[in-house]
Length: 318
Image 1 (cartoon, helix red, strand yellow):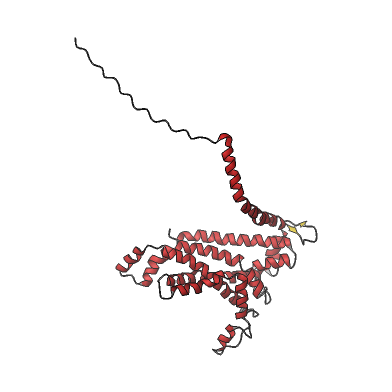
Image 2: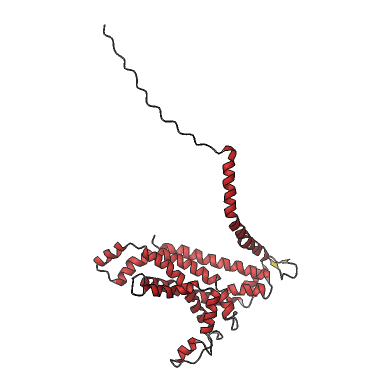
């Protein structure tokens, strides 16, 4: 009788037991982290609530009242909004001025920085000097730039009139002529806006892969074709970003320049919506109507941004 040797079944090795992570005792560590977070975020949170969120909510509520600060507010519902669209004779001119100023300055403020950045990116002689010249307006405040250009546009002693006088052109009253004041403001806005956009475009151009240009040159592409088929597609995301922030800056950031240079004149020829909000609130003391116009301006900015966001799907390459 033969006996069969039964091999014992080999048991799999037991998996190592995970090391238990020590939990904070009683949640004291979590509470300490929250306290540190509030300590660092508290100042900024306080400033945001005090100077941004609360004024926005308060202003929206005021837009439904007739309020002169001195007298108690009176609830008028949507009358302030209706007054802007159908009851204010200045509205058509203010809307035309706002569109003229924004659409007049926007294309140059977007395309000129791209051309200058492309030029600076080629490494031509004196690039450092030209970068300093182009970036100088960036460190100049809006009020300082307005004072400088007010002197440049001066009728009697302004350098611009002296320059055009060399070509036999009569002296012009650039800031007190209804047809010249808005182009003068547009040139000032472009001068002040271009340097920041150059920085964005330079960063985008320096991120373009150089092998794409080498491949384009091997295929026989000239400089314009390299820009058309390599540079432009690669910088379209930056162009979209520049387009958005420049539109917003032109719509809401013209107050300091107009206040210093023209004060809305002559005959309201340079009175845009953001300046009219200030004048209505702090000169005429119509707080409710000014608040309503501020929210109409907010809706206009939102509409421009939404339109550009929808259109970017057709021309922006990611």
